[in-house]
Image (cartoon, rainbow, N blue to C red; front, side, top):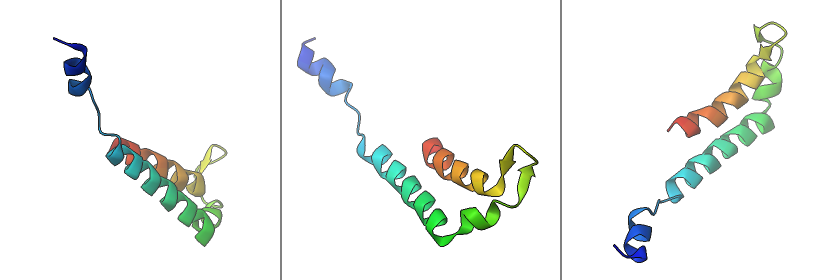
Length: 67
């Protein structure tokens, strides 16, 4: 096998990953600008550890990463 054969077989399409990352970022910024994160910050999921607003931002990071 030549080096060109190996390089073409191991290539990876980053476009879909970048699109999902940008989509998650846009959704996170939208939630912050609309005020959903700040309004939800008062509701504690685990008291003293994590609030609903933090959970919403965490979901916008983890959901596109899981796809």
